[in-house]
Image (cartoon, rainbow, N blue to C red):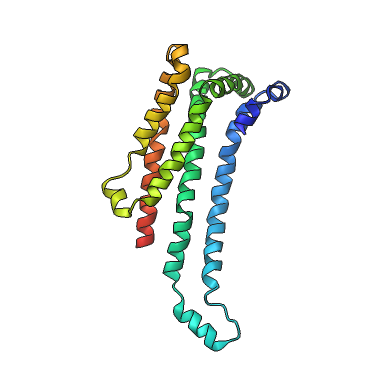
Length: 221
């Protein structure tokens, strides 16, 4: 949404602060999706498990299906099918949006006397500048998030606990390296900003690993 708003400068002229609002909107959508997912996931699981105990009218077939039912295996299969995507999508969204959200917080602290309207209008320019100069860095970070999710999914629970993948440091290194392309022409200032911001954002990779490990342990218990 933010990138789309940046691509249409007239939108910012007609609606000052629209680009910043487009940055904040996904946060509200993500919160709503999380709350909805808590309900929908439970309903989906109940529906999947109930199919194995539904009566069909054939007593012998129902008995055979009930004896062959494996609820634990069914749950594990569903979790395994969704595990990679459940890590990749939130992590990619986080590493793309979090840097600009962090910048917005700093912008608010520096411009403490600004009204919210002035704040949003002024930060629109910063977002457009960031997308123009280091927009490709966000794409690199998103790719690394999907790659990290694949690595986590393919790693056993024991290895995740004993020898976790170094996704955070790798992501920070690649993101900083990608920012060198425009950074050299601008006195390495974009690279410094990316490195400092990434130091606060990239630990999200480690958090994703810890959260996945905790969910696997809960499932195992």
